[in-house]
Length: 111
Image (cartoon, rainbow, N blue to C red; front, side, top):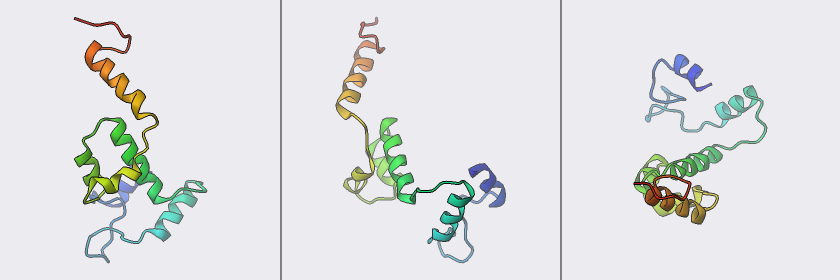
């Protein structure tokens, strides 16, 4: 769907450009969002769900907190924290330590 939007928007940096707004993009996408959901046969998805997914995936990829904050358009990282839902941060940290120290997930130290 996003690839199709790219063809329609003539290489605009925005998925939903608008010549009616000062920002150059659609600022109140309710109508367009509802149409996109209907076209994709999706019953229950909010734009904020995408923001939460984005924040979570970025943290899973170990993206710097400052970058996550900027991508989510927040001025303070504490505002971004509720959008980030890493399933088990303790397990993730231990696995990361293992990969860092041992060089793999097997638990055997590598040279």
